Amino acid sequence: MVIRGQKKAVFVHGCFWHGHKGCPRAARPETNRVFWDKKIDGNMARDRRNLRELKKEGWSVLVIWQCQTKDETALMRRLQRFAEKE
Ligand SMILES: [Zn+2]
Image 1 (spheres, rainbow, N blue to C red):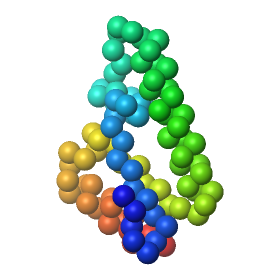
Image 2: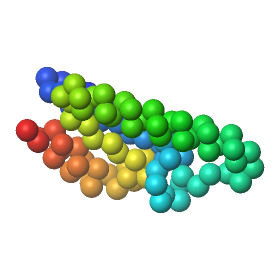
Image 3: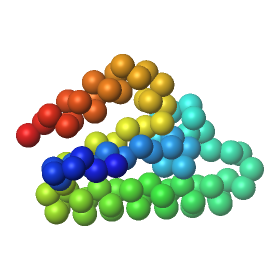
Image 4: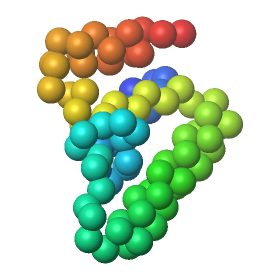
């Protein structure tokens, strides 16, 4: 999601696939542990790389985790603050 006319981008990350730290939804399966660690750690590394690149190019980035979308009021406030930020 990109806010038109501004260099601002919003990402919504699934807690499991993007490895939300400390989040119950991000618990990794016990079976095929090596596979999941590799897969999700890889996603997390890619996310960090992407964010770094965007910031280097002057983008403001807001990451919202899937578990944070449940509280719609809080979510809308965050989006609004982010959109209004200089
Ligand atoms: Zn989460």
